[in-house]
Each structure stands twice: as structure tokens, then as C-alpha cells.
Image 1 (cartoon, one colour):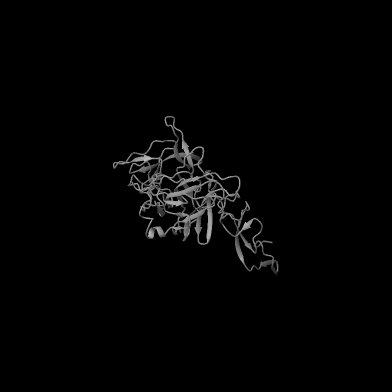
Image 2 (image 1 turned 90 degrees about the horizontal axis):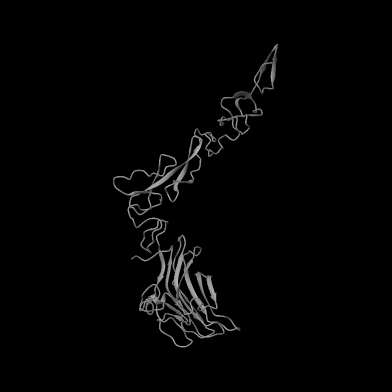
Length: 378
């Protein structure tokens, strides 16, 4: 009895049979059972598709379940795994070294899929300003060769370092020194050395007037001038920090304090919203006589204040000159404050001279808070 596959209702007309189908469809063979059919293997059907048949024609290779529109074309095997008409277009581009006998270092390159072979091609960048970094990439045509392209008539050079964000200025390139607060990204890392807080505590600036009022100090803290001291009461004899500002010791947090004395000094509040990270640097001078066996030892600390929340960054218990530096001196400290960005941020230096022991002193100077390490313009 001839008829359409899938029709189960028949009407008898003598010796003939007529099939009655409500819907005729064309289905396609799915031999590899990946859910996608072969356009070139159709079947006219009545009703739901039978096993190994589907209604779509998405498959470009019905002999492999790994080849379909969900495939990933990254094997460098000459096969179109994702049925988009292209082969190996998702093959990853990776770094690869090219070893040349007369070169001390490998020539850097990038992988490429050619046919079914993975080859390494040298990568150069055109360096127009001759600062060692370029911005325009160029892949050499011969695999395994480290010969750079010809230099253009206008000069310049071909180099292996890229990412130059201004190839017209030799002072701007990856690794260059970032200049603080000039609005220029010298080292091409996406930040411009923005200064959020800078204070050198210069003589005549912080001792009087509005500038001094921006810093909040309690009892036993304030702004002092470096001067020699006698006996147990030690203080910085001179200002030998990074700035020559009239022999001012910045902030004298208990420059000469007896036991059981405490004090703190808070910087102005600054808005660091949007900063990718923060770097704090400052000079510190410490000289506390070691504490005795009883009572609390002396300590100094640095904290970040954000609204009502205060977070301690570091503290030093029983600080004093060490064997490596028996005489008190200035030390530069740096801290990364990546998680402390916000609209109301300040820094708090504090000290406790301890319940026992002799007199002590603590001073800071040259405070700098920036979004990355930077130097002042020459």
C-alpha cells in the first residue's frame, strides 16, 4: 500500500486507498544526532518527525556530532566546526618565541593557523618617535623570520614593544616616569598621576592661616620646626626629607612627649571617587625609648577615615631606632590604598607614648596621595 510516510488514516474506495493528512512537512536526516539536519537528505513526512530526523537544515557535516552551529572553530584542522563557511577563524592568537642563533633573546611573535599548521610570525611595532615603543603593529610575512620591515623614509624604527599611547612624543611610552598632576599619561597605563593630597609643611604656610586649619590636630600634636634636643627628649634636628622647606618638620606628633601621652593629626578631607587606585607616600621620623616590663608600650599608627568609619592601615608597637639604624632618622613609607576611594577620605596619624619608659618623639613630613606613583616635573 503506497502512500505518504506518517499517515495513519485511510479511506477505502474500492480497491484504492486515499490518505488523509492534515499537515505535510519536510524533515531532514540527523545521522549524527546533534540536533541539526542535513539539507541534502530530506524526507516528506506527515506528522511529528520520526527518530533521527529534524525540521532544520543547519548541519554542514552530518557525519560528526562535533560539527554544528554550536561548534567552536579553534582547532587549526581545516574543518568548519561551526558551519559558518569559514575554517579555524577562532584559532587563538598566542605569543610565541622565535629562536635565532645570532640573537641573545628570542624574537617575540604571534601564532597563526595556515592550512593545518600552526606557524609563528614575528611581530614588530613602528616607533615613530624613537623612544623604544611603537603603536602600529606589523606581522612579518615569512614565518620564523626576525627580519623587521623596511624603515619608512620619514625615519623611526621597528621595535618589539608596543602600547605607545603617543608615538609623537619620546617622553611618553610604557615605563616612562609619570609626572604628578600634569594631566598627561606619560607611562601609558590609563592614569595621569592625579594628586589628591600634597603637603610639604613649608615654613609660613601651615603655621598660620587657612592652610593650617585644614589639618585637624588634638592635644600634643601640631606643626613644629626641627631643632636639636637635649637629654631624653629627642626630636628631628633638621628637616632632611625630600623637600627643602625651611627646616620645618611637617607635623610634630609629640615631638617631645612624656610617658602616657597620646595625640593624632588628621589630613584634610579629599574626594577620591573614581580613582583606579591610590598611592600614599610620606616621610616618618620615630624615636621612642623602649617600654619597661609593665604597662602599655609606645605605638604609632596610620589610619584612613571615611565618614564615621576609621580603618587602621598599619601600626608599630614599641617603635624605636633599630640595630640597622641606631640613630633616629627619616624613612620614606609607601602604602597602596586601592580599596579606600570615596567622596570623603582623610588620613590620620596617631601615637601613644606608652605607660612606661622614657620620653619619645614622632614626626611626619612630605605627604603625597596620588592615583599612581609619580614624580614632580623637573
